[in-house]
Image (tube, rainbow, N blue to C red):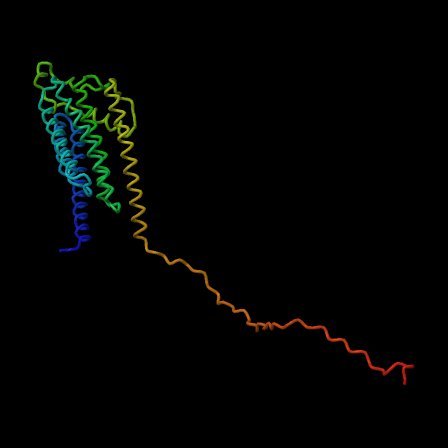
Amino acid sequence: MGTAPQVAMTRRRTRLLRLHLTYKLLLGTCLQVMVCLALPPPWYRLSSAGYLGLGVVMILGLGEPVEQLRFGETPRKLFKLLGWGALGTALLWYLTPVQLRQSGLPVLILWALFSLWSAVRLIRGLALERRVTPDVLRGCIAGYLMLGLAGGLICAALETIQPNSFSNVDFTASVVTSEADVYPVWSVNFVRLNYFAFVSLTTAGYGDITPLTPVAQMISVGLAIVGTFYIAAVMGLLVSRFSTSTWVQEPEQPIPQEPVLPAVQAPQFPQPRLRLSSPRQPPAADPPPDNGPPEGDSA
């Protein structure tokens, strides 16, 4: 058995490999849905199956722990439960006739929550990366496409609940009146609503499709905010990881040093020794000369 750091490193590597596989599957599924939406009728109906596949990839790929769990298994179980609930309601909604308006309400609520939570978990997975690799770029693109397609599904659910929520969108015009009671939702063309969702997500705003009802307007605002936040968060992560990996991979260049001149020693001079001596006494005065007795004092 390895040491604790080696076990932790192995788990981290396995988790990142699983995330890289999720990025590839998520990107492939999103591109498949977009290609199906661009097909002529009746082949565009294959996008409905692509949406279900997208939900399965989001649940199985992003439902695994992307970092060390701080609150136990509860958030992960709630995420999977929400995902399966959103997938089940979408499947039920696809099979119901268009006139059953209220069947799209659970899709509207559950897919909005599930998509936002999936984007958060995807960003947390990207934050674990230490280098910018092609797999990381695939994950960034897949997350953006995932948000756009989820927004298109939410707008389509709103249009089935409240018809004429968006201008220039009438996907029931081709439905024969006698067949309206049995016309399933999955056979409806949602191309223009997906187009509007991506236009709102990128804040392009061409103006050919506009939201008319308050709910549709708030969904458009929400898509614009989510798209801007996702771009800011992902760009910050990419720039920081790219600069860090570049700094680590660059060989360290030796710092040129200035030539050091030999030290010049100052000449050594003998230090004078100080002697302490008592202060000099002034010389004593010479005694006066003795010239003998004065005159007149002779005996």
